[in-house]
Length: 212
Image (cartoon, rainbow, N blue to C red; front, side):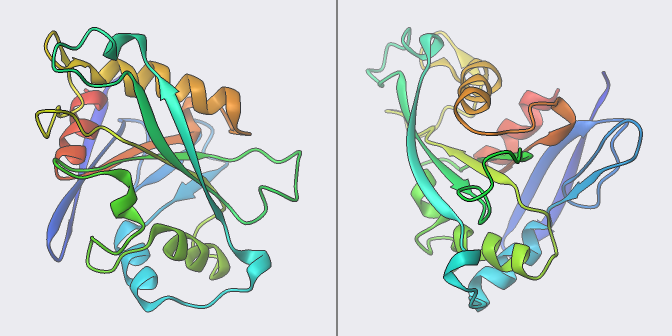
């Protein structure tokens, strides 16, 4: 499959995402080959709504789960990093009450010297991903989806989500271990057309590199 890298410029960052050439998106839009279903996720809108903090009822709020993913490929690193990686997962509002529903998944990669908690604690210009996602869902700007935020911090400060004899196989961690774990543990729509990969800074490079 041919892949295309998409670039979106926000006020202080460049966000890269990757997609099959057959998929057309303005920011992150996934579409089945038949063109029947579509997922759109506008990160800039998410930032704006997240900062605004549109209030939504408790029943319309998603939840953040702290998970961990073990990766055999990371165990070979020589810098002393644990192969068990903390991973934050946003589950949409209906996840707990609709046990039969399956959801598309957005994999969100953080930047160098960062950790996934910074998607939630305001480090990115006050951005709180849970509030942003809840606001977008409440406004019907996006469908409900799962967001997965793995911790890729290492002893060197950055691994750029690439396979390395020194720091371990980070690309394999994302593509194989992380996706496999998420599909087994959560009610995902496990079709490739229902996954998206985006990132900030180093994470943007990771999305670009993995896509190609």
